[in-house]
Image (cartoon, rainbow over all chains, first blue to last red; front, side, top):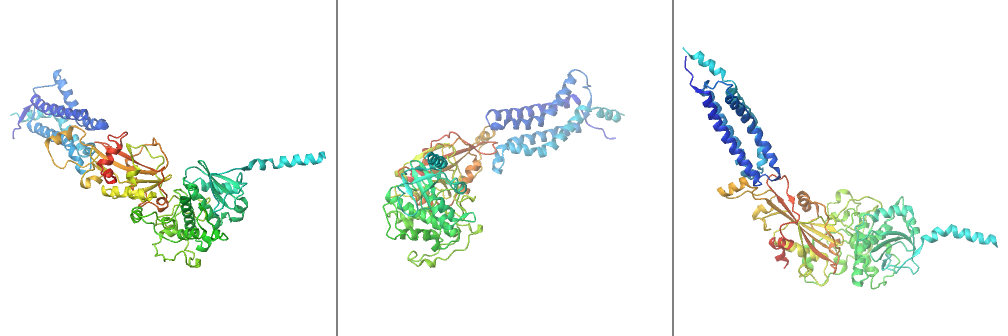
Length: 157
Length: 482
């Protein structure tokens, strides 16, 4: 029976956090600067109404798990499959790339007869299912690491 | 004896209301249609309800300098009068009753009524300036003739109200009866309106045209003008002796149909049931007073009429404006009527922040053009800031003898854009033939709109960033006028 490559749960969480928090911070900062410089005019609320639901739920999940770790209520020695971590990591990268592109393509949206805010609104069409996938993977990864523990036991001779 | 006194008292009491309703008045100017002076003992009385209902409904739709007051009077038929700023429509109750047929006025009565309404619709309609007044009379007659045609009345019947008047009758104010007949028949005949610019070009450098040729169908810029069927017909080549031919050549035209209203309407023409009917406007009216603009500029009359004849008309002002606009690239314009004049609206254009029109097709685009060349700094600027907003402009020229204060009514970009489509493609001859008096002035109203990132529609800038003169100079209009 083939062995499964594992990675420490705390290490995996750190790597994901290092992806999610800086990336979210960058997007947050970008939209904040756009708001400050009047990019959205009087419609800055619409921009924030789009951004916050896009990243905050996943960040909240991570913060909650990390707070539990700090309280020692979870087993930090557990290991998870590297495939699960990689899947979660790269889906997150793709998700952030999509979110960032939605913002970065805003200035060019005028060429196609639309605007930044219209693009944000339209992006919900593909971001919503993508966010569902990301949340599912993150939840599976952060909330249910027991399955990996069971597999490790099963893989032991 | 006491009985006789009592009877006299009774008679006084009985007739007091009628006597008190009568008042002897004098007017500054007067027209009774028959080129006669007002009666020496001209008396006015309150109108009868039936006449009041019918005539008031017609008068209420006149877009003239003032709402005419209706009085019964000892005039021959209908008369128009002016005293100061007040205008009056007088009618003879007996004549009115005799001309009522099945609840409508007879065509002859309508002809006279249209003539008088035309007088009342213009500030100078009853001018006492001899040369101008004669022209006004002919314009009123021409409008009357047009109304007759729209009623399906023959040319003979159209001139029948003048029957019995001596041909030699002429005064400093009134043209001869023969001239009036010609004017009525000219209005009666189908014709096309020449464009304002074309007419002005034709008359450029020439003496003022004779009244009969200068009147392309006079009429007030009133809203109560039905379409004249004759205007929907192609222009016929008129014989040189078109007015000298026997009247019987003017056969009754086919009755007008709504489908025949495709031609330019004759604004002053009244329909058979214009008195009391609710006909749609034929000359679109610009909002009056005009909505508040971002900027405005007064065009000096010396510039406006630099190439106009000695006795300028409104069409000369229109031609000057059209010429300047055309040279500046504004080939699409729209005419509206305003009290005592006209409004000329340009197509909405896009400009830069300095008021210069954008090059190429971007000038007429209603969306903000993206940067044509990509550069990183431009991209970062567009990413963070609102980018370059779109600036749009509509110029409306108001030529009128009426002073006005801009109304505090907001104008949307769509409304301003639609001004081009809602107006007329040329200046109606009824307005163009009016003299450009010393009271007339041309004011350019500039409606400036800004379309910012994220805005669904461009917003009017009040006040604008540029002065009206700057707009006109940078749009290239002022240099062309100059």
